[in-house]
Length: 157
Length: 284
View (cartoon, rainbow over the protein chains, first blue to last red):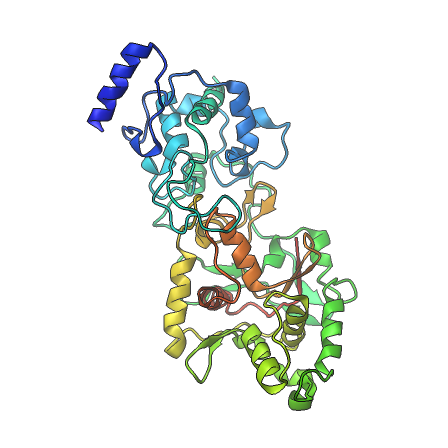
């Protein structure tokens, strides 16, 4: 992992702000459940993050209520409400939770959105059929950044 | 209701006072009496083997009033047409042996109580569910073709047999020869399958009563199966529902009629010991 960081740092020096390649799901560096650096170096797209909250493999509001998304129907109640989430958590912590919440909360029910191996009976999306690991992660590295960017707008103070 | 050893995000949210207004966070207080005469136990003390829940509830208690109403009178219950058709099939000779169900078993009411004890281990030491018993009769005694596991003819017959026990408490055996199958089913219940890494318990033990998107999570009891699902407008088998739930964790699911699902059926049925047999229930 240290070697990966060195490569990333070297790449950063060469490429300026943007990574050449985002880290593979297994190579993301966590610190107490947080991920300090952007996975891509490309700023997240708030509008796309908002979209991902509601659909596809994001579908965050299946479990979380978000007042800023009250135009969308059927918010779930399983996870904590996300209003003001950016007041309670740093960007690095939010990135860590969206990437793989189980690093911070080992028993969490929340799916790990940037993870590709280590599953029990991994399937091919919702077909019920088997799939070989590594699976495509539920969200791409940039989609993680987009969701993080949207969540960072949820401030109450 | 939340497992003490495994605080979920919901539990932490509750501690922090962050949970959404729990308008539907519990089962309702309604009581189920079918046809004004058959009292159905929809809430009772959890069986001793359950470590994390004190009270068990029928899925009926989590449904909206208009859905609940469909089950309160057999004239309104859309599944009863299938039960009536099965009653005709009961008396119909089929297969090379020239037998009907009735020619061996007489009136279907002789099966009163059977559903409350299913699944169970047979004389050969195999765990069998109702589909197995019916297909054994069809192929060996009637010399007729086996029915498909979740086919409407099979599930209608299971509902007809189930109605003979309606109102009786579920009471499946989990000890003796059933014990290893029960342990296998329990292991499955707590296994986090698929890319979403969800176990049965994540939704139906830790978070029943809460909304997941538009669905009000129940305890996943199967005392009402075969169940008429309005979404599919037909009778749904227990294994079909298991298959769909595990598929929806983005997992390689199990097959209907697999030994794995027989074991899971035994375990899940045992979590409902004390609730009434309720088939054919009506759900979303």
